[in-house]
Amino acid sequence: MPNPLQDVVVIGAGIIGAAIAYELSRYELSITLLEREVEAGFGTSKANSGIIHGGHHTDTETLKGRLEWWGNQLWDPLCEELGFGFARVGELTIALTESDLGSLDHLIDNAEEKDIADVEMWSREQICAAEPQVTRGVIAGVFSPHTAVVNPYEAVFGLVEAAVANAVQFHPNSPVTGLDYSGDTWTVTTPTATLRSRFVINSAGLGAAAIAKIAGVDGFEIRGRKGEEYLLDKRLRHLVRHVIYPCPTPVSKGTLVIPTYDGTIMVGPTAEAVDDLNDTTTTTSGESKVFAEARRLVPSLSERDIIAQFAGTRATIEGDDFMIGPTEAPGFINVAGIQSPGLTAAPAIARYVADILHRNGLEMTDRSHLNRIERPVHFASLTTDAQRDLAAHDRRYRRIVCRCEFVTEGEVCDAIARGATTIDGLKFRTRAGMGRCQGGFCATNCLELLSSELGIKLSDVTKRGPGSWLVLDRPDGTTPGVSAQDPS
Ligand SMILES: Cc1cc2nc3c(=O)[nH]c(=O)nc-3n(C[C@H](O)[C@H](O)[C@H](O)COP(=O)(O)OP(=O)(O)OC[C@H]3O[C@@H](n4cnc5c(N)ncnc54)[C@H](O)[C@@H]3O)c2cc1C
Figure 1 (cartoon, protein in one colour):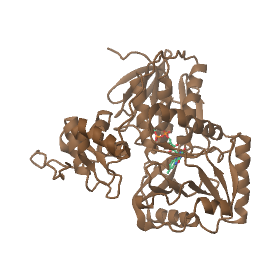
Figure 2 (tube, helix red, strand yellow; figure 1 turned 180 degrees about the vertical axis):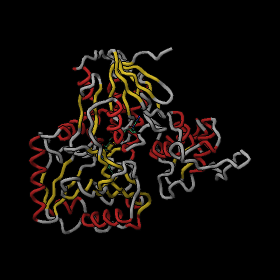
Figure 3 (cartoon, helix red, strand yellow; figure 1 turned 90 degrees about the vertical axis):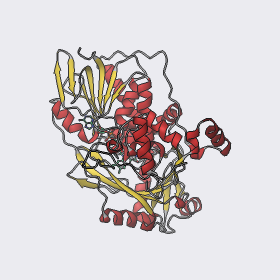
Figure 4 (tube, helix red, strand yellow; figure 1 turned 135 degrees about the horizontal axis):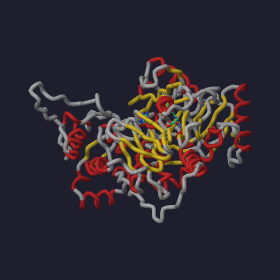
């Protein structure tokens, strides 16, 4: 039997596709979200700085400049609805030379033009008092209270989960391979399904040009701009309280010092043009560059404190702006070139796309009731009494799976029930493996829990999908056990 006609198929479950699916789930629509990876958020959305930018870094003439500030304001209600980690820590952009001062004036002008209140020029003394670790060589800076930090992957998972709770069909492991239009309907093909839909949203990130090509839409090219990031030991918590920005360059906001939502300090990113869109390597030259630049802002930073490093690639297009809108193919909408500040702008992009759909004939009736999702337990941040209560009711909260981040078996099992199928999926949902030992202790525990909860062999558990197995079957086909530490 052919699949029923969908109103909208959204391609790509990064922060953009997830935000669009969630926004559309507020209406009486049939929606399918397709993702080629084994879990949502495994593209650029898991590998960024996690900053909700203040809105004053981009000019008003660009689409990204308009959507950045709008998006910034939408994160509070979104966080309230979905309950992921989000904190308005504020930012300081600092000038180190007289020639930097023009950039600071420009940021203040942008803020005034966009009507962003409370963005102020700060003196050297104000900056040194607020951030004692910032270089004494600072001359002046721009302060904004609006800049925030977020757990980007938690946000993607929350959006997808809430969308699914409100009737969106989510299919991971579903790379779109065919798109054909006839008789007012798109036929969308993946290796395992054929769907029919009135509208198709191309939010495939680095894959957006390939998707547009499959749909026969006039070509554009995605150019990769890689960014390397370095996470430092938690003992440096509170080294800085605000996100510290240098004065921006024409292609990037520069290397930042970021107090992440989880309490680590992160430095980065680089901005390097790459031909290979799948290049997520970190390099010694990238590390040297990041630390040389970051030390100009905060001199005490050291490479010796690195506990993890990663890279993500920004999907840029010619003109360096977002490309969002209908195309010459009826019902096919591009949401492409979503480089930085795509994370910040995501909730605004979702509303902007919903409006485009409406203007292009999609009837949108509010759903009478929106289902809310329950916020996952974060055991480490509960009070001792609350931890005791939980552990008394459910034994799984008595067993610590990840010692560095104090993650319990209960949280890991809950994450699996919510859709985690890989070691990385667990790590991004629960922080198991994100601490100082980087999974040295908990990887085997997580492996066994994934195997038992999903009812699959140990050798079928992967780090992040096919090709990343952790345990191999013996030549005779049997699966070895793992010598996991007893988590009790
Ligand atoms: C190093 C770095 C730091 C950054 N820091 C910030 C920041 O601090 N603040 C900020 O606002 N922005 C930041 N950004 C930008 C931000 O991360 C991106 O704008 C955002 O993640 C883009 O989301 P997306 O959903 O478009 O892309 P993605 O997250 O890549 O999602 C696209 C999805 O489409 C899927 N897909 C591709 N092809 C297909 C197919 N054929 N079929 C099905 N699915 C497909 C992919 O697997 C992927 O999951 C940063 C980017 C980088 C690289």
